[in-house]
Length: 375
Image (cartoon, rainbow, N blue to C red; front, side):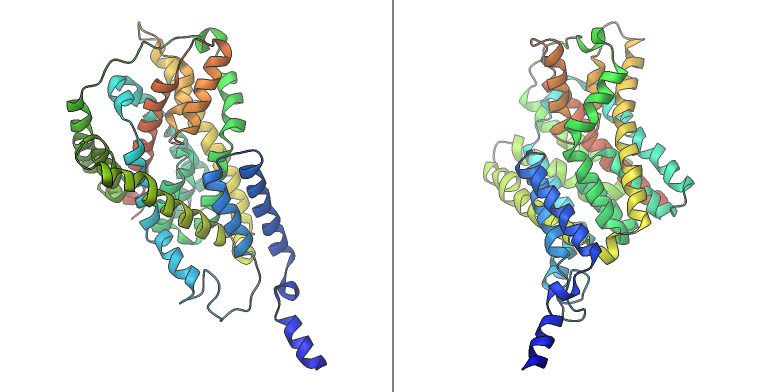
């Protein structure tokens, strides 16, 4: 009887628990706290945090339980991450949710979305300098775009062994936008610049809304064919939204599909952070470089807006450059809040959304370019 009890105890997770597992479970609980109590991007952090907790429950290897074991349920669910299926479905839903009218009305703001991608390429050089392999460095650098699905997509293609830390870093910095971006925005702008009002958005015609996703998909996908599965579905989702004859499909894309993909993507990415795989020096380096990438991306957009103002008669509020990263709609919301703190009558949300939308497209193109170069 005593032997049976002993055998039972040594097969429990309590007996198999390591300090690494315990640390990761605590980190998962912190994610859940930030999502529920602080309301930092709960749609992202709740499935990720819960996945971290579940993924670090110890078990005997070989039973087909863990996410890295063949034929386990979680391994099959993780297939959507490693193949890029979930990120592509998220882009479909994102396209069905996005209103590109601001981007069409303020076309010059596309430049700020492009400028914010400089964080990607500076971080690529930094990652190479400290010893990461080229494909690993490219995967880390894309964190600068502040786009979780794009980061996961590129990492799955170039460095699948780093999906866990890169995804956690990308989503962590997206959730911490209210903490990270405002100090950079204040540091790089003067009060006079923050008070600049943007012209009222012109009315965008239905024809423009219809033509934009078709023309944009052709131009962007010809530029970076390797980004087809992201950009193609992004613009398909948007065309479903604006064409007026597929509202049921658009509703499905922006509700059921993106919600399902977000749950499975976040949960399985969280589960991939098993302590024996996740806790290493590379993960620490990725978190450091990710913060650098995101900060440089934010600063690059702001600085480029200030440079444009040297040559433009009609000035751009430099705060808009911070929305050039593709963290939709978090960074645009922070720009609006910062502008309103200086002047309650200054409404920057719509032009900020133009920069945000441009950033989504820009980060996908950057991922496609990096993928093609690294292969």
